[in-house]
Each structure stands twice: as C-alpha cells, then as structure tokens.
Length: 173
Image 1 (cartoon, helix red, strand yellow):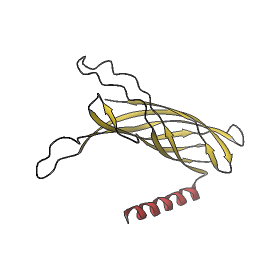
Image 2 (cartoon, helix red, strand yellow):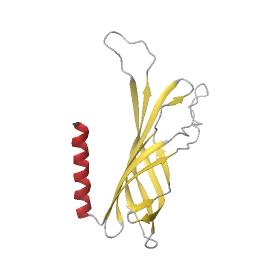
Image 3 (cartoon, helix red, strand yellow):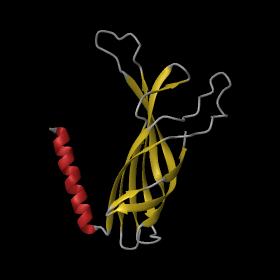
Image 4 (cartoon, helix red, strand yellow):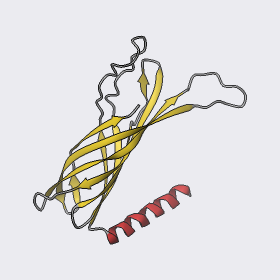
C-alpha cells in the first residue's frame, strides 16, 4: 500500500511540475565510479579507493523558459562491495543542483550543473553474534559533498533522449 501511495504521489507531483514548467525531465541510468586513493590516512590502515561496480541512478530536472533550473539525483551501488578485504559496504550519492541547459540544435542540448548533496555509506554487520534482542545489521556514515557535472543530451525519438554525462564529487570528510 505504501508503494502505491508513493507512486501515486510521485506521479501527481510530476504532472503538477509539468503544468508549470517549460520542461521537466525524468531519467534513469547506469554509471560507474572512479576515485583516487586516500594518501592522508595512517599507513597501517589505508582505505582503498571507491571504484568499479554498477551504480543505478535516477534524476529529475526542471527547466524554465530561460533554460535554467534545478536537478535532483540519486545514485547507489547495486551490490555490496568489500572494504579492505573484510567489511561489506554500499555507498549512496545524492545531490541537488542548479542547472544551465543550452540547446545546440533541435535534437541536441547540454546540461551544466553544480550543487551540494551527501554521500551515505552503509557498512553491514552480517557475521557478528547477536544477543537475544538482536543486533543492528548496518551502520551508516553520511558526509557532505560538492558536485559538478556536464552532459550532452541527444533526443533520438520525440521526448526520449540519451545523455552521456560526467560528474565530479568532492566528499568532505
């Protein structure tokens, strides 16, 4: 029932946004992630870089008639990864951005965005012994992030588009 109410609410919100907007885009996609190694950690426990894996994503973008607007995005790792060969974890990246979206011609355009958000990492505790009352199966860690991104949209059929994009995240630790 909750899923149905959530779906109906989201649909109504999208319809309302479309009636006021010059353009509203909803996108789903798949990504991967590359990050650099942390060189400032203690030598005894250097965290590995986050890289690889599939990161499904969803985004919602509103643009005004002046081609400026807002963008909200969520990306997460589809499967658990292993941190330093023993700790299962899963990162989530979410952000809200200001967007400038020029059109180059009738079928192509671009998006340039910058904003703020957070990274939440779930660390799973699957193998610890639990007392009778149970135990917490995950611990999360959330950090503020800065985001910048750019993409090129190609409208291949009516309002359907392909959008290769690149994002830069700076996670404040």
